[in-house]
Length: 468
Image (cartoon, rainbow, N blue to C red; front, side, top):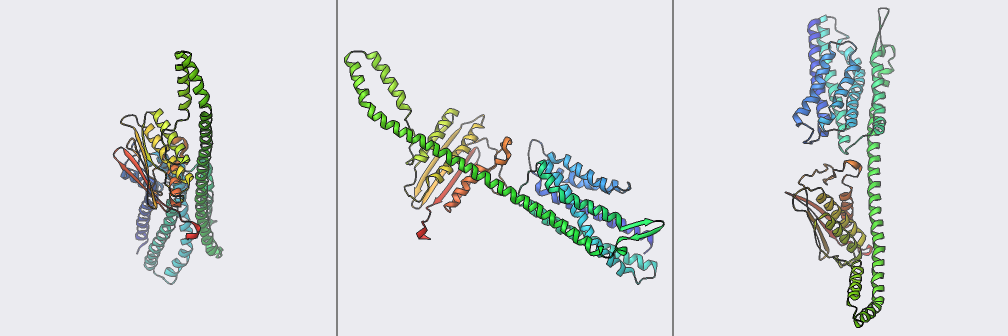
């Protein structure tokens, strides 16, 4: 093989590598692209944007000297600027770009030490120029293939880890996550510049001058990669912990709210008892007004009594004070919104259900139903609640009208809220329901049919400690 053929061969392999890296970048981004009708395009267009950005910038780099860093930043900036169209969080897109190029550089540093040995093995005993170029070509193919293979493994592990939990990054969190990869990129850039140094027409090779770096550089690259993984995992665990704290905080708030309403109910029953005691006085007053013939005053007196009695009215009785409070509160809220509310809920007679657990389930389901009805601009708005005990099982169902548009979380299979004001609380209501259901080894089933959303929950009686 001649020198010209060898150079051409290197350019062809380099072009194939560029194509494969562009494919890897696209595959890395693809799982995180979401669909939104109002401002995002089809998946094919998104793929072309990611793939085309890398290819275009890489081609320009062939004609611009010392282009590596600049090209890297241009690709990342282009992808970040397109994050809205791709359906990705802007900060997360920037983080993904940094991670991709960092892993590419780290895989290159690891393989370069292997290249130092294999290149000498392939050519050290060859004397003919043709043999040297031929073996150098074989070594070039081997190193390029091994570099791509190692890069794919490293990228897949990080991508799989990122795919386990959705990340919505703020600036502070972004700075925390990109610190290690940026340092790794800087380290790789320094090592690359030191590989071959020309001074006074003399060529100094780093690994020939300092053989110890043959082991040190790959180890440092591996440590950087491990540091990136540890940082991602620790961040995701921290996010899980924060999410759990939020869920427990909301549950505690709900229980506290129910307890406060229970105190109001206690006052309500005290008021009824007081009314019983005062009834004799009322009857005496009415009798006196009637005997005196003052019928107009008697009518006003009776009207005031009727108003005072309305305060103590509970329109829906479930068989339990906790669920009485919740269902009646939601019924009143529905009435104010003009939503039809129907309840056939009967609290289970078994003492193996905790009233507060049932209360949290019913409260969250009805609250979600009210919010869904509130967003409807047209059509019939309604909520129906049912609760029936069948032997050792208790069945709860809530059906409500909604606007027909809903999005499910790919990880939890639960609907997510569209409350843009508080993104951190997405899906927490139904997550709380799911956690309560799991206490009773139950099941949660969600169905969407046209403009009706229904949640069906099946609970089992909890065993006592003696039964385990």
